[in-house]
Each structure stands twice: as C-alpha cells, then as structure tokens.
Length: 110
Image (cartoon, one colour):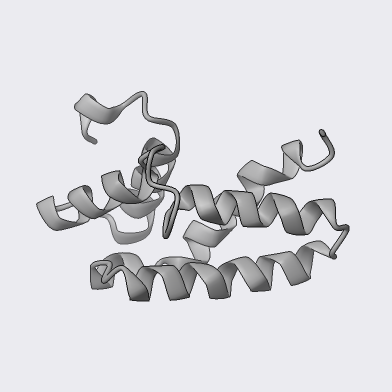
C-alpha cells in the first residue's frame, strides 16, 4: 500500500480493491492513472463524474440494477477513452460498484 496517499478517500478504496482482485501492488503507470482518476479537481472523465452521474440517476428513482448497468457502461467508456492501463480496464465492474455503493447513502439527501 502507498502510505503517502493513505488518507485520500476514493484512491485508498480503489487501491485496496486492486490489491484484493489482482494480488499485487500498483505499478507506477497504474498509480499515476489512479491518482489522476481520483483527484478532486479533475471532473471530466473521473470518479467524480461517475459519482455525480450515479447520484443524478438515483435521485430520479431509477431502479438500482438499471443504475448499476449505466454506471458500469460509463465506467468502461471513461477508462477506454482516457487510455487506462489494461489491468484497470479489466476491473471496470468493481470500480462502478464502488462508485454506486458510495453514492447510495447520499442520494436521498438534497
């Protein structure tokens, strides 16, 4: 685990998911991409965009299974457009699941 980034919220969750699924640490290319993907200033093509889109769909009372499918497709598209490392592109369903689960407790708030 990268101790330098241990308090960065979405990054630490994505990193733990990556380690659990692949059994290896992030290499330099994956680390750089994931830090950019999770950075709070980066709105377009990032986890912040996925989170906002998930919140919007949940507030419109779409069924959760439909929101999950939409977020998975959007995650796959974003990872492909931004030229994510292949190891991260394979984990698009898990990334979408993290985004959806993190947005669910907040969708009922205004």
